[in-house]
Length: 269
Image (cartoon, rainbow, N blue to C red):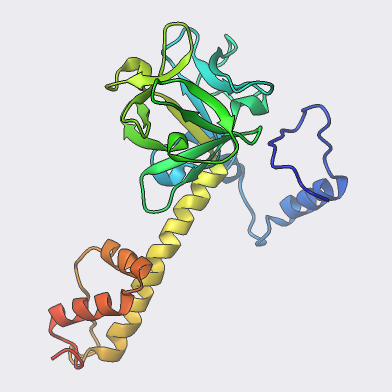
């Protein structure tokens, strides 16, 4: 049976919760999580809800794009029947930081593009958020191209989204979404929010990646250093170059260069 890529939330009409999964989830919680580690209420709550996107690495999975340029604040929403997108006001008792999506039309699936600071946003109706050279914003294409690529510019007050036409997404005074601004101002700054659990996973993956290169360097140091009375001498250079070298397939060469600079390697005299 083919699975739909369409997003759904608990409580939506037609959404059925698997009772077996629900029982398994309850049993897992009672046992202290999948790894058998008891989680406190605070750590569990830190993985729930929606949090601010602070880095390109956070743009992963479901996201919301909100603005405080309107009164009350509003959220970018995609029409299910047409390609139109617009900013829809939040309920009066909700704030940007406390708001959770009430419809799949308010959620986009973000995906960072490899080796760039750009990302794509796919609506829950399998169409990509894009624009044309005139600044018309719509969700009409099922395949991604340059017009559906957005560059994230993180600021202290939020984030701006730049198009491939070097224009910025904005919310105009009629709550319409446009992408024709030449510079970033109040109406071009958005609060992009992602699921907390995805942000935590992204940070852990980043830490694990850094740990891999550090452990490899440690093992090479142990095998290669010829002096120090058991004391290992490490390079003080940034490990980011090692991660880039790993991507380029040149990790061993980069490690050799770092060891040679230390002048404590019996194979790098």
